[in-house]
Length: 474
Image 1 (tube, rainbow, N blue to C red):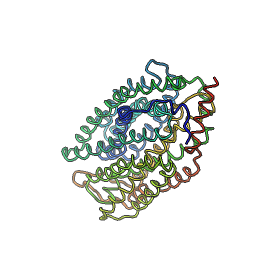
Image 2 (cartoon, rainbow, N blue to C red):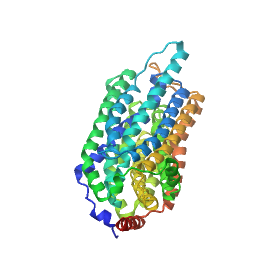
Image 3 (cartoon, rainbow, N blue to C red):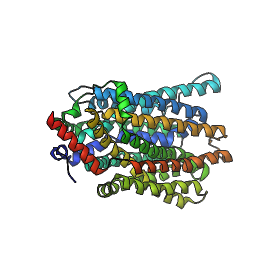
Image 4 (cartoon, rainbow, N blue to C red):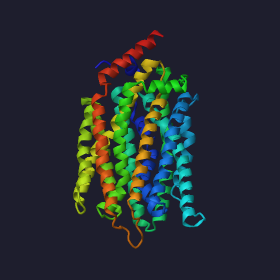
């Protein structure tokens, strides 16, 4: 395989740089896992919000989150600083990000009786969600855009993302372990969630600074070789959006990412209800089932990275998705009492979840190079922000619809006297559809899109050669 001169002349990343880059995803992954796994049951079962309002407050937060993604992406592309385009956002956003995460686990009291308390809590959690998601984006989106600025090598990007998602999944596992331990120590659920939020808030902030400190040298070295990497983008915003969505491979990556992560987050979000209400298992099984998925996903990351280097990204995606699809269908089919089979399916799902972490994010930098070839500008922030923008809109709508359906069909929250109430059949039907049918449908669509994805390893090498030739002629 012919390497472009840019790739061959670029400094190879050492282990410490890869570790620092991987650490940058720890805080956001930690908070994301806590929120997707525990926020809905916290709102409905501890704070006492009706499922309909709990769904609505999360929808509002996700809609705002999706709106601020393109804003931050475009602004970070335009940032001019001695520290580059991305690092100032991460440095200044990290502490507010941790503070507003912690604020989501408080249960304030409001006057006005039961109805006043409901709407007071709704507006409180909505406001905190908007602020947390804003700073989540300020930290995370510039970080993800660093991938294309640290290396231009096709395979090294997959390796780099292996480190990123090793930290990401590792932090997700840590979040679940903290959740499991706090559940065993603190019997009062409100205290448990407050301690969980406080510990994870602190742990979410520190790795951001490790990432900034540990990757700046590599970023500066790459910028010296390719000055386009550090240039702010001058193209008008409307034109940027138009060009981004006229990039056909980008649309494929968007679809693959949306389908993969819709399956991940729908399953993670419904698991607390599935384990307790359908499988009739104690609450600690929520964390252990998710640990089985995430632990397997983490263990498979570097295996899939090696397979990708030999057989390509699409082949890896098909292997992982096939196993995951079987697992999702199985989750919809098993019956209460089949606990061992539940864990077997969780491990199978982990094989696919690993590829959902690795492959779409490894494809996106290749799309950015194609855009640079077509437009003459590098616009990582635009592409990263719009893919996450669409994902969050879809996820917000999906989670809201799930909670609305649970509420409309008569979901019964647990009490101290009845910790695992028997739910109406309509609620159980909703839970099984969300844990099996909807994710399986999304995975099938993702596999179809991956089949037609046009940028192969050979095509990417051709793009890089054309970019280098154009730069020599300037």
